[in-house]
Image (cartoon, rainbow, N blue to C red; front, top):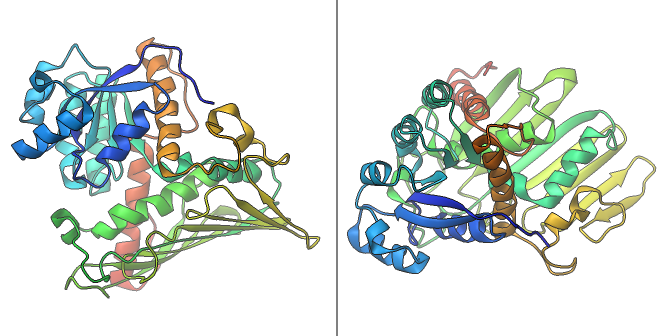
Length: 375
């Protein structure tokens, strides 16, 4: 079981109301292992929603702020970090203001709508000697971390192909009502800001930071919302003849969230499905098959106590994956505050986010030029 014997770090939420897509998830996961508590917030521009969220989260009325600017002004000495959970187009302004005001910042992906915005946020981190962590929740799953370790120690051999798909149905299913901000595209379509960032991050995470050399992409519109890109294909070329193929979108009926990762190496292949998060399937060159889970004697990473809040056979899932990220961020933040910064292999900031958005920009350019493009 994961435990924390240190005083919880104090958070302020900007965004993250109970009506938002991820607010309640962040509230629960940040507190799951005792590393954080939520002390204040500006949860919503709507006063009634802001107040109802504060009551649900147990935040005092005097620390429930009407604007994020007011929160930054009044809570300067009372918090250890700000968590930004607003729609992606608002991230840049809030993150830079918080960093310039001296706050450590935790931000939901995508960090921004363009690589240029990411650079501006990274500049704010650098000029303030600041702290920034971006949450990409799927890299918090124990079996994804197990797969990363298998790749790193050579168990799969030379990695030749990675296939990632993330089909969803929200833009085509009857009765679907996407949030308004998701129905506007930028140079990077919002579906890529929403789903494509995971494709890049998971590839970056699993390969130990490899960067794509060039990409070719295709974008289309199949859903109910005219002119909004909702389906993307991509093929990317990396060093050492590695190829990454991706498909993600929101018009695949029957898939609530069909994230699947397949990695093919010269000695073995591996497959992980988000809907079956406890299992990592391996297929070896001798024809044998094995399924790793947290109770498997062959598992390395997944057997660690921090990933076993419950015994194997009691599935761990989405909230716990987020909680694993928050545990990593808490450790990183405590070292930062003690002026003993220690790089974490599980905490990612503006640089990685900028690389991801350059990747997505290249996909968009390729869809227009019908050519390979360099990120």
